[in-house]
Length: 228
Image (cartoon, rainbow, N blue to C red; front, side):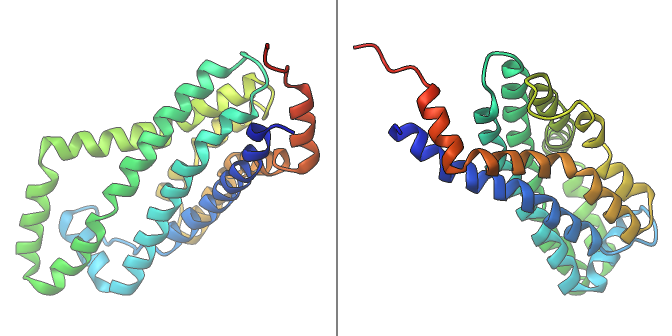
């Protein structure tokens, strides 16, 4: 067994665990997200401030879910065995990692928006919140996070499906979690969202299986020896 093959096993194992755990944290974050009375800025800030502990629990779970996705997704490239699907997968990896970093960073605002309405009058908190969110650079940050972090996971799965690593059914399913969370009651939406993250768990399981000693040994034997 060469050094490269031996080193890939623990990396795959860690990445696999990250992708299996990420949906669980995402589920917890969605489930504990405080309900809003309406879609206004005041309604949003009031919902966060109503239960400081619960709001920060939700923010922490969502933040680390995105961190785990960013850490685990690059290892999916090691599941490929040829050139088939490689371009799609590599593009999906790059955009998904970028989007996950953007999304995890956006959650920092929850620590501020949770405290503001309990520290200053709600009208002042709304004014600060609306002023910040109106900044065009923040809009770019949010949009790139949503597009790359959410919409580009199907591209990653399409590459893996083309390579035969997962089935094509995973592509539409991974698009549904945020739709479910937005349109269904809290616990039902979160449960449906968790089920829709099954493709990510499946990829994590594939990585865990590829980290086994027999698979690593077989890969090492199948790798051509470098030319002298």
